[in-house]
Length: 185
Ligand SMILES: CC(C)(COP(=O)(O)OP(=O)(O)OC[C@H]1O[C@@H](n2cnc3c(N)ncnc32)[C@H](O)[C@@H]1OP(=O)(O)O)[C@@H](O)C(=O)NCCC(=O)NCCS
Image 1 (cartoon, rainbow, N blue to C red):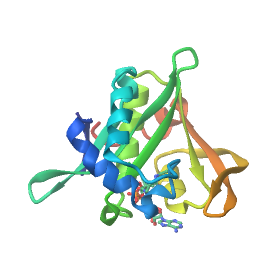
Image 2 (image 1 turned 120 degrees about the vertical axis):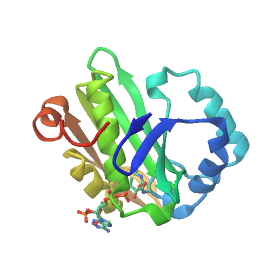
Image 3 (image 1 turned 135 degrees about the vertical axis):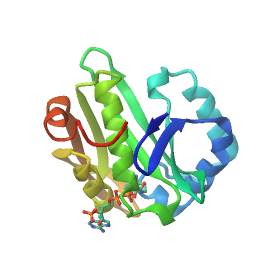
Image 4 (image 1 turned 45 degrees about the vertical axis):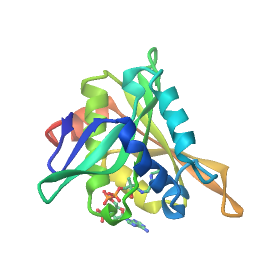
């Protein structure tokens, strides 16, 4: 468990899958992610079975927030494509419960995961891709210490047009200077 001020990150369980299906079938959530088709529980179960074969460091973590004395599942995040030689990894995040957007919970979750990546997994660079149409996410990543490496032109076909994608990253040396002592982790 990775615990912050308001959120905690825990390992994912099979019982979380129905919530995932609900989130990723919501067009407002899905338009920010690389999911284009409506999703079934069976497809998510297959995805979960495949995920369990990956290294444990690449398995998604669930974001939970305390509500009325109970931890409530609101989203997930995690690392993908951990490169053992370069010590880099790609990060992904989605808060599926939309009523929790815009309250700083995404940024807090990112800070916890980045701390975990640098201090426990010995990563040196954490990067991500975000659509130009998603300013909330860009701002949240900036608040968590990421900066834009570059703009990848017309990478994504979304709602009838091609959109650019920002490549963003944070380095361990930047983390050490600016963020190391933030959050409980
Ligand atoms: C992206 C996401 C993780 C961010 O988490 P969050 O808890 O909503 O974000 P935070 O509250 O921590 O920060 C959001 C920031 O964006 C700002 N923001 C919101 N809408 C904005 C907009 N249209 N333009 C510019 N900034 C915006 C907020 O004001 C806030 O910045 P501030 O604290 O300086 O005021 C979450 O919204 C989410 O999961 N969205 C759906 C899936 C998704 O987009 N995933 C990321 C794919 S790359």
